[in-house]
Length: 322
Image 1 (tube, rainbow, N blue to C red):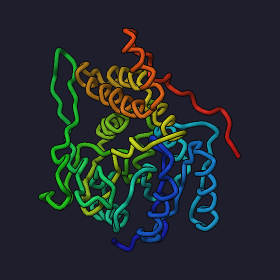
Image 2: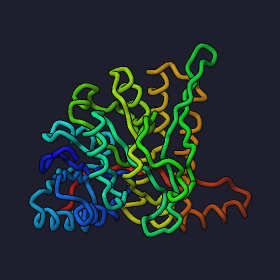
Image 3: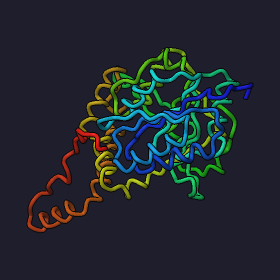
């Protein structure tokens, strides 16, 4: 690793769409990662039980710092709050529902160090790490671009999505068109060059990639680094976790973000339609786990009435419980 010094990395753990995996994710990072990092936890107004567990971790781990919040945060807000606090050469942003495999951080840092690149991402799986299928979410992401009615059509494709990790054909480092905020390493210098994230709740990774291109910054995939998040776990979310997911994936907020994203880059409407559909589908799946509204709507349909909305989109809790 070219004599990489100790504590050369700040790992920033950011809420993504729930809180219940927060402590386990942090404990696993400490368990399987070389001590070349310090940890910055963007707490994001988690439930009181989770906050107690986070405090206990910080008390046991001198390298762990927690930034508390009195309201729910969108991921880009947490990232922007963290960036000014970084004082190491590298920073890794990782979501609080992502599990890491042994050697993940060492591989990312080695790639950035040896290739002298400012952004490196791992292979992302879309299963729990204990799931033997090891299905890939993104390995080599590609951006598709073409002109359409005077505007740019832009879309992202994932050619190895659904492929088993063990069947991925080429484990060499290679250029990548985009990363996911699930887990990504930056040089601090790159963040200083490109700047804070825009106020987007979706497509924020593509927006940042386009800004990086303008700044002539490269992205590499390091296939020796692997992380995993389980998409199917949304079915099990309850209570605050379920309400936070619906807040985070607000359809109205996503629509507003995508309109701003499209206007910013002069994109054809087709460039954002699929992303908005995904938000609607994702949040609808979670809304369908509420039993009482489903029963009420079943009764209304039998009576010849229209469905009521399953839920209003929740507002963040205004107070921080002790």
